[in-house]
Amino acid sequence: MSDPAKSIRIGTMISATAGRAAERIAEIADLGFESFEPFFWQTTNGQDLAELGKRCRESIGDRDITISTIGMFGNPLEQEELDRETLQGWQDCIDNAHHFGATCVAGFTGRIRGRPLPESLPRYREVWSELAKRARDKGVRIAFENCAMDGNWQAGDWNIAHNPDAWELMFNETPDDNIGLEWEPCHQLVYLIDPLPQIRKWASRIFHVHGKDATVRWDVIREHGIFGKHPFVFMRTPGFGDTNWTDVISELRLAGWSGSIDIEGWHDPVYRDALEMTGQVRALNYLKACRGGDYLAIAG
Image: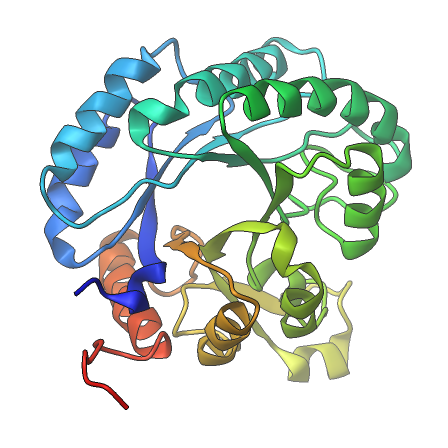
């Protein structure tokens, strides 16, 4: 009997920019991850994505591991050389997602640099209406990560999809049903937003979930506020932050959601560098426990 617990899989992200994605999957595939999200930062570096996808799947072999989503992170709305490479990377990822076995491509919307968020909407509509059509023709969905990348409503770079008010504007500009969110609670906690009600409201637009958390230091906020010299929040690996992931996964299940929660590492101030994979495997096992633990095929 198939394991219905795995309608929500727990995996991790794999950097694909430097050309070692398949090798990295082979190195960690036996640690218990159930999915991988290979991702590129700004550029694919001219890699043959069809061949890379084939090698990634070969590294997985006959293990019960999926690749549902690949990532392309950069600013495809602007016109610098790397921005143009990012836009080309989105096109290439959409065209080649099937070689990875993926049905979703995720990343940032892009943004007109240094301008208030609404000023990016015309360019957003121009670029993403075309990419949405391209993706729809390939049976691919597009998911925007809810990360501000240090931007805000007034100014920033990289991304406008970091705030529920922005989601309303974006989905009005591109009402395509294959455009949604790569959601995680971390980026909402960073801005002191309660993440759980978002699942109930936006579940139909959540196509992929990142496993990343945050610790809010309320004592610092009470004494120094959020604009002082002391950091008031840390991004954390799941299991080390404030989010109750049992509640997150329960809300996702109640909404009928299925898909992958892929851990986004490299941000935790403690479990990093030599402790990176120690933290990630702890997060993997923690999230599996929050999902309900081992499936028991026994009738109730």
